[in-house]
Image 1: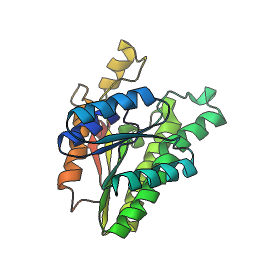
Image 2: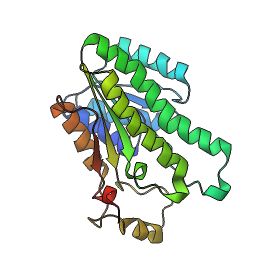
Image 3: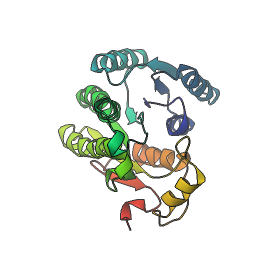
Length: 237
């Protein structure tokens, strides 16, 4: 299962896993048409894909989706927590609804998926959970504090679940850097962002997807790790 896999990085992860032989549960909330296109691309690769929709702010909706998907596929081996909301929230303009939405979508939702599926994986005796974090979890940007707080929570969640679900389930995270520009990011802001990246360039969704595939295929003795895929941005400076 790859959450938020209708577009952008989520789609790249879903297709990379399908290329390696995985059937894919394509999760979306509102981008159902894009999710159907991801599923069609998976099918063209010769793998099975089904679209399930749920608002991950709603624990009951997440649990219903997970139960249905588990039953349809006869189990789930891998969960990739990718779905997230990212937008600028300047401190002076920040309202309670902004804070609640960011924490609900970017932290509560991933935890709901990981808790429900992680317990089932543990009971079955195997599984992997990989959550997509962000360089902003460590280098907190003043204009994006709720987002950065949520991603820092995802990393804490990863370490806690790695212990709670061991030894059957491996739980890790990938702290992605600039692999796709946010919509509406102008050239000046792009240039400013790259000044904080030692490699002085953007990555790509494929970089994140390859890291996910590595943890899925070769991460049997890796758990509780946050792997930076950010061109060195986590180094600061």
